[in-house]
Image (cartoon, rainbow, N blue to C red; front, side):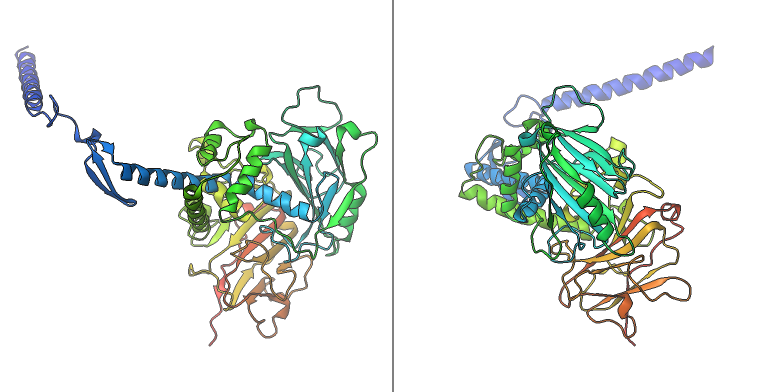
Length: 517
């Protein structure tokens, strides 16, 4: 009992001491008012009369910015919003550039399709297009045509429909609901409110414009069978004209020079305005619409920046373009790499076709979205999901084994081990870092495909590929040409990947600089 009383007295004494100290502090606080106030004001909520920052010296009178400081801050705010608009609106301008590129070839209606009947060579500017499949590309205009039918023939490879912000609408062909057996798809416009007819694989888009990207596989290394499949079996027409659909027109994109890449300068914002002004306002959430409107890009209003704003947006585009390239070539997210101690990088950083960080707990992974759309096209969950024996997987090599960028004036070697984990094919294609399109050299098809190309095979079953301005003696069959004074990077593609890709029991070698003795 005595011990308990002693403890209680000790606790009471300690509590009294704490309260006394707190009272003395409060008294002292009250007795030391901030000049101009009756009480002490925390420094953390005050603004000094002068602040040195990265944008210059900021000056205030009692927290009120001077006119000069306010002008500087508004310039900085408009510049920052211009940079953020570029980084966040890239999906829209990229798809718009594709639309304009196909229209330049004459594909202006949904029944006018661009087909790479002789494969895609290095003539067109097309973000990381491949040399290995027969592309069949179409655009829908749901505002003009209303609900639109897309008939997919049996045997089609991976196909996808994306909306005007490059978001997934529905897969078609092998990874789609028809599972490669063919079928009729119905794409509904965003304002559709009627009864959905039966007999179709149906999806509703958030935008008027939609891009359809279809692929067909080579047979015996040739595009003929896939080309015939598309020309005989692909049909696109408005549902309202199902009884008398317009004839299909197939426009060859092979060996043609045209551009499908968005601008990296001030014209980027003009491309974006075209999309925002055309599409339904509900296509984007208020946050993105507000960001774009802050620099003058708003539906129903002209985009007409004054000289000050145009100058700021021109600089913003330059900085944002450079930032996009930093995200590509100077990765700081270690999870973007496929293997430890390797510079092979995954195509979908973060592993989410919706670009969600940590399954959405981290919100939108904006850098991953910028990373992807700056150098690639097509958005489908099938590219992010694990699909053994189906779909496609990608990795890209952009640095050598020492972490240096790839120099077109030097010679490099890449070893691909035996038994590549792809049922359809594995290929390596070389690209230009400026255009992110196929590298233009004396080789019209800057790629190698293990099912199409006859290459020298090593005794252990592996294949060595060589990259350089000249073929190493005796290695011409395994050589991909590069250009002195230009950089390059490569994309490794696997169609219908097997388990060995996912469990990483098979992995490509690093890109090694060949040092001559």
